[in-house]
Image (cartoon, rainbow, N blue to C red; front, side, top):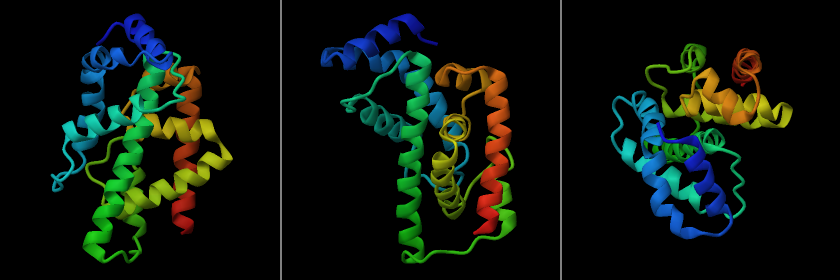
Length: 193
């Protein structure tokens, strides 16, 4: 694990316009980003078109290219990385669905959706379940932004309760409560579809 104070200083320098720290920052956060991506990669058993390294590199490039990124700390940066990985994975799932299904929307069974939401790290989600989850998550962002952030950190970032709490600046108890509430809300929304 990288030194949080060093990473925070580099993030502040990057936000201040010092692009020279990009090369120094990447090695410091690479292992943690790789761990996040590896947790995601474990779900995609049969799909080798987007590997762990590619996911890390795409997420990192999205993060350092942000002109208005205001990262308060290393934990906050990792939370934002989880959101970037979510967007990359959703884009990838949309492309896969379009290729396989000619762009047609496929109806999902309740069992497939339940399996996608059953735990923080399900064995595998079909692209359709991931897309249904993303659509519901977008609606949740309108209702309760913090709960949506908890889902991004826990589900897409594979972060622990403590890591999520640090990234969002809330207590672990709040994260646990938001996680339970968000899962129930998302399940209800997906079931409604």
